[in-house]
Length: 369
Image 1 (cartoon, rainbow, N blue to C red):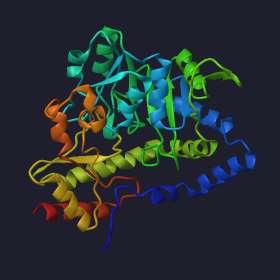
Image 2: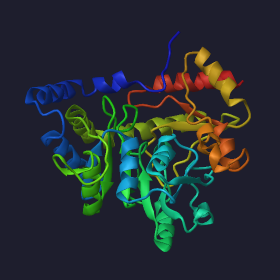
Image 3: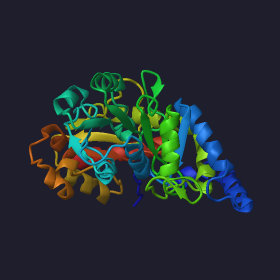
């Protein structure tokens, strides 16, 4: 049986294999494995790409969020508003900082935090908003920034799944005080291991994060703060620097794949297609809603036929066992809970062939009928 995976990292590596191999060998022969010129050069190129003056690389997207919160002095007694429909790292970083995550319901069409609900959640304890550009689709940053400015709140963009996405022609990660990126291998800009970065136009915040990620040290063996060890390896920076040059082309391929899925699925009953309202989506995932069938049984039938579809994320954050102390109950955020039971992500990656997409949709139609 021919299997179609949700993502094929080996296929993507093959497209840059010669360049990547040479770059890695150059780093190995240089002896500069931590920090150094390759990392600095990647940070500069990434800043230019996003449209900011500063990039601080780090070890993961989770660390990027944590370092951002620490640099903004957000901690015990503070609240941070975010989406309940995302990977736990977003809320986890808030909790690690000492602050409390506050979840608001999502927009059923975009799956993103609903800006119209933001002001209902703002209290005197609120210090920041973390909008998550989920699946590669940007949040309405015009509205988010208007509200944040009016209430004097910080904005930390979670861009983990959306490198290269844009809202009204401006790239995500350049709107808020800080933008947090993940370079996990499955991301639009993914390395061959873990990695992350924070984008900003604030030199003081960049300086603070550079110290925090180096054990709270501004110079060796002088520690002004309790920090962490969070550095992007030079080998990963070398690979990311190559892949960054191809990112727009890669994202264009993702858009073409999404367009073809839309065409193939146009008249399939019981399915709601994902939208790209503002045209800035970069399709880290192509995620449909299954509204008439059982999502889980459909996924199982697809897998039995060789098509591996994924569910991101089946349990919303406000209902996770670890956050039961926050007082949310089933029904607290009804749109999020409904969407979590319906979403199904079809195979999506540069290198996915049209005939493979056709097989995916043929299999899906057979499974539904």
